[in-house]
Amino acid sequence: MSNHMNPHDRLCLLSGNPLQRGHIKIHFPTIDEIVAMTYEAYNSMMVVFMTNMIDLYQGSGIPEELLEELNFLDVALRQEGEFQEIAIRVVQTYFKQEVTDRLFIGEAGLSIQGQPLTNELWDSIRFLILEANDLNTESEVDPVFTNEKAKEIWLKQKKAEEMRNKVKNKGGESFENLLCDIISSVCSKSHSVTYLNVGALNVFQLKDHLGKLIEIEAYDLNMMFAAHGAEIKDNKHWSESKSDTNGGK
Image (spheres, helix red, strand yellow):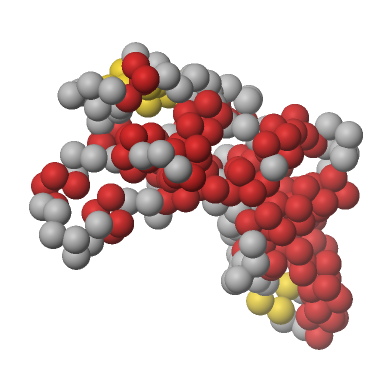
């Protein structure tokens, strides 16, 4: 997935403010809000953001140019049943708007916060939300060892990295398990985020906090390895910005 988040988006998410696309404000639920709605309900909303109309109706005979004008949120709101309930939850959670007949009836299609939700605008929003919910975290470059003592220290530290590798190489693990692991790791490592206040963070803030904790730990470990003869590459101090090389991730 390409990078749909700009530096201002990241600043808004880190400060707990809504993002904006066009005139639409996008709100991100906190951990407490996810708990209140149940994780299953939260996870079901991701289906709405992940569904592409062209992929959904591929081979159905519907002209592709028609599908390009539709978005799944609009279609789901017009259909009674489970998908409509999930779509209503999306509108209430991410756009802080109650669903009424006026919301989606009319030739212009669905309007959110008074603005028509074009397919182009919807794709911009859904990709942004999916990116903010991506739990991948980055790790430092492995050092090249020049003596056995440094290598021995490194191998001993590998056990402490199991959680980080689990997040990075998540495989078949559920998002829910990964989220619980990140909450546990952040609360165990952080001096400020605890089990008593972690619920006030959104998912992006949570994973960013863990990423910074990993960077701090990696920097400290690499400095220790360097003292034992390891050749450390690109060991920037954890307080240095990476926006110039990572596109503001």
